[in-house]
Image 1: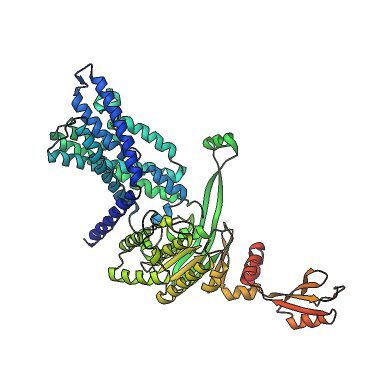
Image 2: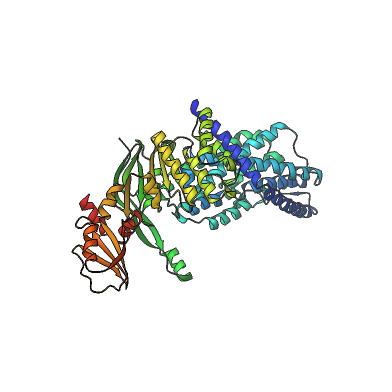
Length: 270
Length: 336
């Protein structure tokens, strides 16, 4: 019990630190948001043009698709890059040594920090892109708090799954020292298979199956489908169960991978 | 009672060797040539509670690698380390609670946050009692002059300010063992002095064990009673600081200035000429066999001496001599 209280105390500080660190570069964040907003307008115009000739595509109406796309675009920047680059940087520059010297579980601490950043960014996205979507694109976001709650839980699970996946990915840096190339590959695969570009139901069935076996959809397509109404709430039980199973496997693999590969560490430069 | 116990410790790095150019890079991709580099070899030593040990050697001798194995960051290839009863690698978190670390070449504080924020988080992580934290913070602020920088983000600090901040962060949880890896690198004499005084005072009041690597022998002379010298990954000297001076400082130099040109001088035995110019002669002699007055008398009988100066070797020149002549270490090992 004491241990739990201790952990909560530390994580409260970690959350606070991360918010403060984020705000230190806030100008960067807002300017990035501006560029992102512009791209969203391009996406919406593209889909509107596609729908001008037909009523539905893959069973989805224009309103459903647009809601999905705008929401997916809001989630995209939270998951697009992950922290693999940062992880690689710690290893390449040797700053990993300071991280390992702190008397708290390394992965847990980074996880809390990462989630904090993700959810602060989400709040900012919802505020800006969200109000833009409602006011300019006339998108109707759900008003049922239950839908929002299920979305947030599903997103939390999805981001945790992706975190573990990225952790495994990051550990490759212990061997290769450089992860930039891997990061680019990951980014491209994520674009298609997470459902950021288009709803996964629009993919050919072969690719849909492939997407199901990758962790990316868990963090974008699945929560966004809930919020946009593409997935009805009565499937919630099986969706969460599936996400929990994913999380259990990925978590185990990520811990194994780290414990194994940390032995390979060579701290660069003095 | 020893708090750090190092037995047969060794670390071998395996690196890929690349030939130059694009061709070499591609070749290394498909058929990498590995090269093994022994950074630390069969190291043995024990350090007792409250000791300040200077751990010195040339660049690349294996100092930082040893420190990183002691702190639990690097995994040894052979041998074992025990720090306060813990295996630093297997019990990383438990070990981290007992130690404080300063790497002179990299910061452990949060780059974008004010120092006070970093210190608060460190105190939180190490569960420092709030009242104790307040007490230590005000003490550190005074000794390390932190008041002016508490609200400054680390990235805007000067090197000296950064190092004072790092020390505060490394000591705020009152660690039992502190590893300082070049804590005075690149600092001006004032800051160096302040940092040395801080370490010394802390060691005396808390009986904290300190392991210090440095290239600044002023640090060693002012702080360390014991010195371990490492060369090419192996320990070559482990003993009191004054013994190094006695063993290697047995040679003194004496310089004679004259008013008339020096010609044809007969040197006493156990005496060696270092340099000779028209009006000046520099000699080196073994003080265990000859006294300075014997050398002076012998010379004064032959030349018209206007002035002479006698030089005791300082630690720097002794260490320089040792670094340049690794075989000299054997001498000390025999004499130890």
